[in-house]
Structure formats: structure tokens, C-alpha cells
Amino acid sequence: MTEPTTFLTDLTARQLLDGYARGDFSPVDAVRAALDRVEAVEPLVNAFVRVDAEEALAGAAASAERWRRGETRGPLDGVPVTVKDVLLQAGGPTLRGSRTVRRDGPWDEDAPPVARMRAAGAVFLGKTTTPEFGWKGVTDSPLSGVTRNPHDPSRTAGGSSGGSAAAVALGAGALSLGTDGGGSIRIPASFCGVFGMKPTYGRVPVYPSSPFGTLSHTGPMTRDAADAALLLDVISGDDWRDWSHLGPARPVGAAYQEGVKGMRVAYSPSLGGQVAVQPDVAALVRAAVERLAAMGAYVEEADPDVTDPVDAFHTLWFSGAARLVQRLGPEQRELLDPGLREVAERGARYSALEYLAAVDARTALGRRMGRFHSTYDVLVTPTLPLTAFDAGVEAPGGSRRWTSWTPFTYPFNLTQQPAASVPVGVDGEGLPVGLQLVAARHRDEAVLRAAHALYACGAAGAPQP
Image (cartoon, rainbow, N blue to C red; front, side, top):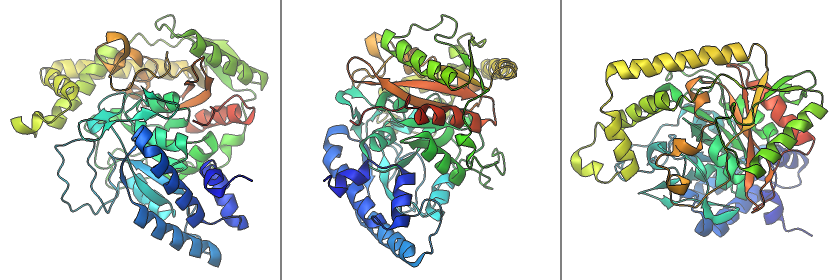
């Protein structure tokens, strides 16, 4: 018989909740199993900056008592979760991967989505690793070192939500909150073989505001699309601290289960030949697209008009980095990741006119994608053109910046569209491959419908690390 500590860490949040309801096991059992898993894998992957075992067990005991009385607090009651360490979580410091952040508090406020998870009964295991201030597409920082891929610790977990992706892949918490300013949820989800979604900008309120402005989204990282739908409904809505939020959001509810029959799907294998994609990645993504067609979706190869917007993205991203470090004195700047210091110095040289030209380019891209989605419900691409490369470097093969290998992700931060990465198997080296789904702004349910359909037919998923 399988030991409970192994079994429970393999369950999704929905499966845990069903088990609590039946009395098969309790939140204490699930949280203890998750903490045991953290202890076992943390030396190998380095996914956590802080583990709050005592607090987690106390929260689990309180949840177990609520389940015993039939008075559950909310839809996540007793589910073990983690939070990327750029989001405020009351009770401990949020260090953002930086030696420039002071540990002394008070740390007494939750970010809006963290507060929603707490109110829904989630049990917090700890904070997960991030590169310094979430600035790049891999997870290493001067503060916490290198986070490694759970499928091969010599490879990167991706970033900037690499700790969250590794934790979910390893069963160290069923749900995690990540952030995504250029792919930071989707990149590590693809590399680690989990589901990760960037909702429409403003659906999940943000506080404090990201230094990278309206490029950065907060969203779920989970074992599957059903769990992401569950978490998205918890964390969506309005919060007075975020002036840019969209207000009350239509719940996803059960809409993610409606299937893809009749859905109009555009499949772009390489953004019109702009991107060289590894053969294993291309083959696995194409096979998954064929499964969508077999389930009744209208699939057509079609490329959106996405002439590589990297210059506009760099102007906005590097300007955000410059603003981020502007408050730091010379001694503090010497503590920064050298790559962050370099892009911040570049960002400080942009003029206001260059910044506004980047905004114009962003606006034009948003219009083109709006026109594209008047024909197609969902766009499918590879999440990334490659699988995980060596840990500890920003880019493979001598490339300078992380945007050189993420051409499918950052354009859709410029346009603020919902986008997700779905695992669709592994390459010849056993490394996960991700498929990206993108929909029009405010059509988050379309992304989840297509993703859930892939899970339901067996086309989505990756082997356990």
C-alpha cells in the first residue's frame, strides 16, 4: 500500500478537498506530508526562502477542526499553498530575492490575492524563491542562490516564479501564487511540467504595484487547469489598494469544463517563422493541437501579426528596473545581481519620448491582437522554443538577455491578455514541454476551457519528477 505521505503530495487541491469532505484524511495529514516533502527535496532544488512549519501545522489543525464541525471557512480550507516571495504575506519579511531589502518590519500586511487565499482557509507553507525583484526568466539571486529543475537538478527551473513551479511539481503544496511580467509564470511552468496562468491584467488586484507597471500579472500555478480555475475565482475581484483593478470578475465556476467543440483555434508553430523551435517541442505541441481538433475545435494554422516587439518590451522593462533601483545608494547597488544592475543602468538612459514610443508600439500590438481574436477564440503556440537549459545562467548558448529565448511569452504581457502554459509531455531527455494558450482580454475562461480539455483527454501532463 502507498504510504499516505507520498499519496497526499500527489493530489490536486480539489482531490484534497474531496478527501477532507469524505473523512479519508485531514488537513493535518496533508500539511504534514507537504512539509515532509519540502524537507526531502529542498536540498536538491532550493525552492524556498522560508518555510513556516509551526504556523502551517497550527493552521492545519484549525482547519481540521472546522471540517470536523462542518463549518469550513472557504473553498481552499486546509489546502497547503505557497507564495512567491515578491508578494506580501503577513508574519514574515518579503525579501524579493534581494540583499537590499531590510528584514525588520513591520511585515503585517497581505497582498490582495494572499489575503483572499487566507480568508478562503488556505494553509501557508512558506515563501518561494525568485530572482532579484523578479527581473529575469530564471530563478537565481544574490540572496537565495540557484533554484533547480525538479526533473533534472543540473537544469534551471525557469523564472521568475521558479520556486513556485518547482514546489508544485514536487508536491510541496498543491497551489502557488506566482507573478508574470514577461513570462514569469509560464516559463517555469513549462520547464517544470506544471500548469501556470497569467490572467487578464487587472483581474487579480495587485499591491504594492510592480516596479514593472502594467506588464506584471499575478496568477495561479497548479497541478492542472481545474485547480487553476478554483484558485483564480478566489483571488479575483476588486481591492481599493489597486486603482487599476477591473472590479468584480465573472466567476469561472464550472465554465472551464464546457469543452472545445466549436472553439476557433489558431495554431502558430513559430509566429510566422520568426522563432526556431526545437523538434521535440514542436512535435509535442502539434500533437496536442491535433487532440483539440479531434475534440471538435476548428483548428487552423494562422499567425498573429506579432513582429517581434522586443525593443518596446526592453524599453518598458529596463525603465522599470531603473525606477526600482533609483532609491538605492552606491553601496546597495553593489549588492545587486550584476545583470539587474546592468539593465537598470540602460533603462536610466531612455528618454521620455523613447518610453512613449514603446507605449505606442504596445498599443498597436494590442489592437492587432484584438483584431486577431475577433476571428479566433484561442491562439496556440509553444510556451518556449526549448526545454530547460543549464542552471545558473540567464540564457543558453552565450545569449545576453532572457528575452532572447522567450519570444512566445513577453508579447502577451504587452497586450495584457490571459495566457497559460500547459504541460504536454517530455522531450527525449525527460524534460517537460509546455504549450501556450492565449485568448482575448477578459476571456480567461476560454484559456481554461482549452487547457482543461487537454487534461481531460489525456494530452496534458508530465511525469512526476
